[in-house]
Length: 232
Image (spheres, rainbow, N blue to C red):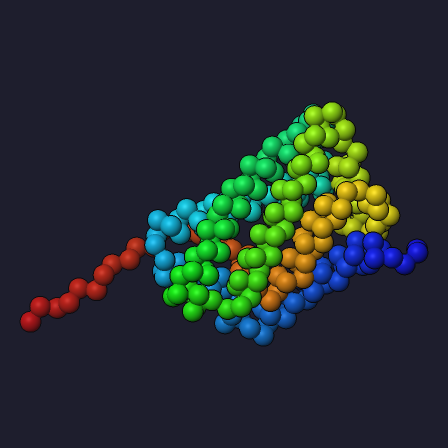
C-alpha cells in the first residue's frame, strides 16, 4: 500500500477514531460515572424554545444516523425492491429533510448556549465544541447534495455505490481507501468530520447515548403522591 494522506485519513484514521470511541467510552464509564450524563440545561431556558430546539435536533440527527446506517451497512432497501437510482432518490430526499430539521434545531441550541448567560455559565468548553463540530459535519453533509441530486437526476449513482463499498470495507476491517481516491472532495471532508465525531465522543456529553433509558417505554407507571402535612 502506497503511503498517502488518503491512505491515512480514510484507511487508518477511521480505526483510530473507532478505537478511541470504544475504549474511551469504557474507561470513562468505569472511572467517571458521575459525569456520565447529558448535562441537561433545559431548566435554564424557556420550555417552549427548548421543546422546539431539542426535538428538531434529536429527530433530525437520529433520522440521519439511522438513514446512514441503513443505507450504507445494510441491504434493506434492496430487499424492499429499490434499485440504486431509487435508493439514492430516497437517500437524498430523506437526508435533505432530516438535515435541514437538525440544522435548524442545532443552530437554535447553539445560539441559546452562547447567548443565554445562565446557559453559557453552566456550559463546559466541550459542550460548545461538540455541538459546533456536529453542525459543521451536518453542513458538509448537506453540501454533498449539490452533487448527489444532479447526479441522480441523470441516473448516475456511481459515487453512491463507491461510498457504500468503501464504508462496508471499513466495517469488515478491510478498509480500501483507494476506492474513494477520485470521488469529489466534499464527500471526503464530510466523512473525515464524521470520523472525528467518534473520536470526540468519549470526551463529550454524547456518552449519554450509551445509556438511553429505553426501559422507560415499557416500565410501569410510578405513582407519586405529595407529602401531606399533618394538621395540629
